[in-house]
Length: 370
Image (cartoon, rainbow, N blue to C red; front, side, top):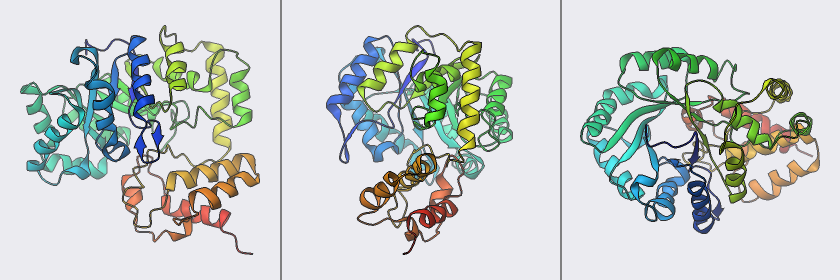
């Protein structure tokens, strides 16, 4: 991991868009600013932005900079292989899409009890270790969304793993569903460095409710996002904190407080704890807008957007959320009530949300008759 320069990574999951396509002009500016500030870690996966994340990396990074200037992570995702024989061709297609000959990190993606047996049956871990031996991968790791017990099992069965990517933020730290703290402690027990994902919880900790934002604003020390990212980066064994940056302003903000990183002090930690309490009291849907759920939805429901307007209604209780629900996100179809309860969304949700029931709640709130 000697190539990694600093502890902030650029997640290529939430890039600026122009309609259905990545805004490559702005993304190039973001990449240039990130590298110029001394940061060099980039993270992608084939499913991000329906494949556009990888090709955007090629257009904005790998075709424009020498290979030694950046560290690149990609992932093996369960729904892109059915047998062991599928893995190598898929891997080669990822190299081609990204425009490189090797990956610095290759992660077994979104490991959980639901898909671990599929990875084992297809010898996915063994294939990744073989790719490392061949020089096509420098480090093999996992990204993980499940219980601490499951993580302990995986790291016990595959001690060769070199890194674990975890969801880790101050709201999820002691959450019984996400188990950020307990999973982090398992990584420490096994001596595995941690790569943090969702430090800002899909933007939720950057766009706080007014009363929560006021607590951090009173510190006069930075953006709401800055406290979330610094919280995550301040723990021993955290090697990298990923930020899914969506515009140049976010890149510049992150650079400003991570160029010369300092952990949260006692006053800042106390403020974050208060924000945590306020945030949890709102009863908001803990969706991170990863959008894994939307690709397979047979009714083309924009689930994360509907959850976002539901959260907005809970916070503000005004007409604005109703407008966005009816006139923006469901104007041409895909209402919450269109859900046929097939359950495909719940099978891929990293947050283990009961999406079908939540959509019923959304429909009851926004589709009231009369």
